[in-house]
Length: 314
Length: 250
Image (cartoon, rainbow over all chains, first blue to last red; front, side, top):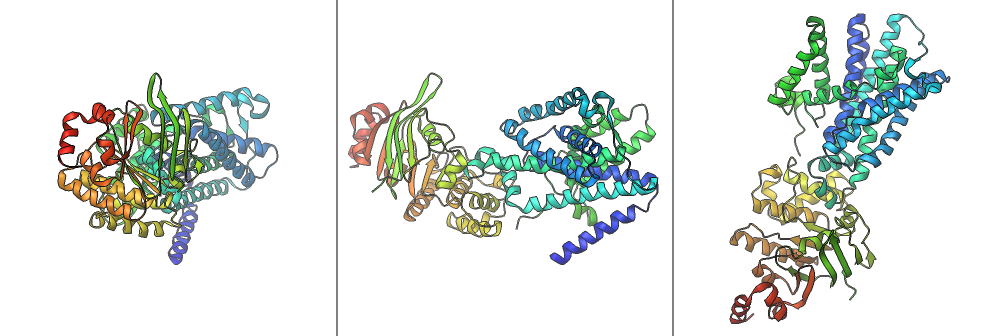
């Protein structure tokens, strides 16, 4: 088991550094993949495991981005600023969770939807610290253009790898079991002794931790952020689509979904400049209609099967 | 002996409706007590108040000497009160074994998932579900799901088990099996509160019976005594039933 873990970790590191040698376009795409995968994996914790469809991803992303931006402008080194982004996002999720996690189903979804709007307005108005609607610049990191690109690639893919590791851990943990019980029948979960409030809040915090990290790294990557960019509602929707595409509540589904989504986005963007968003929407509708369980429902062979299988109950 | 569960002056209102009106009762450790009453009498409300799903408006509930009136349902489950639901509540996407494992893990005090799984396998064996362990819970028959409810409840390692209409919807043969199972649970020293509308079940299993009617407790005593009680006959059983019971020598 330990040997397998070490081998997998080594392979992951090799793959990430291997990718970093590719050309700038591939590096850019792979960086976006890392970002999307982390967001989808994070959403899957609260939306898939716990069954609470959060639309607050943009809120934690924007919060993380601004914490890093403001932190770096105040002189914090990048790793510290990004760590702080994750911590603050998780803490904020804890507070927010106590307020809205008792709402169920669509009520929770709607409550979570407005959080990003509120944060955006706050960021807009708090001009002294955030720069308001003018946005805020971040210091460039040292190194050549390609060196910088490689750095962000490694950062984003590492975050995705950590989020994946956290998901694998969650799947085997007490917390994961509690969240799965909650998703299937919250009343019954309480009756068998699951402290549902605590479990949901921890799940929400774990999910937001990674979103906060990603927001921080993103801000540093693009070096300039403004409220409309980082609190963009699309940031809340995309991770849900990716998880739906790949398979909600599965371990590797969000990863597969992020890859598929990015491929679709990229292909359609390039070939159908006028109507790409419409086609993308249509494809999503079709996929959800005909493959409600996501791509994992197509039980493939070989590698594809390895990626999509659900863990057999022992 | 100190009662295991003691309910004093409990009243529960839903807006204008008094669902439970000044209920007083006590369950001794190891007892099997039946709770009967017509539909809408407040039986399930009483269970919900005991398990913390609803909060009592007045009165107090103590379990093993401590007040549980303000505790949350998951706390109460961990303290040792288990219940089955009238409408069964499995985790449909999990296997039968996983369902019981979850129960053993959270309120059953298992130290790890592996330990919980071992305990769960044992409870499935006891409830006659061992051969169904790998099936998804949603694939069980109604009788099987009722057994699953029992296995889950046992996995909580309860001191008090409340069975809410655990026989509803079962055929006579299945009821006989379920009653045997209940008797063997009682043999383990678990106090059983049997919420029923089937008289046969109560008379065969319980030592004592409590009658609810319109939210009031109208009788509490040994089975034979309660069944011949005038108020109970008037309110619930009807005269013909009482005569038949008398004829049968109960």
